[in-house]
Image 1 (cartoon, helix red, strand yellow):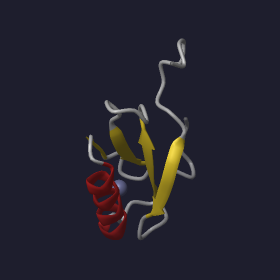
Image 2 (cartoon, rainbow, N blue to C red):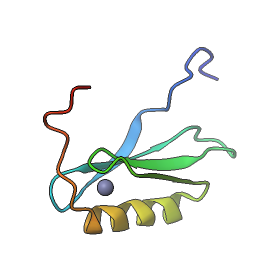
Image 3 (tube, rainbow, N blue to C red):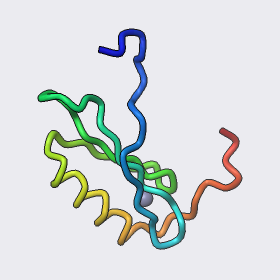
Length: 76
Ligand SMILES: [Zn+2]
């Protein structure tokens, strides 16, 4: 639908980890074939799932256990 957009979509929600890293949840497509994903900017872990509820729970669980610091001084 969005044509030239080949990057992932806007974040839908965020969870904050124990030390401040952010777990961002997004979806590649809101339609039937959308894939939900989360990405942690602290430990660079990520996960995806076609089920939004399951993915959200996974993101929340990661945020509840991840002790990574936020990348305040990351080069990029
Ligand atoms: Zn993490």
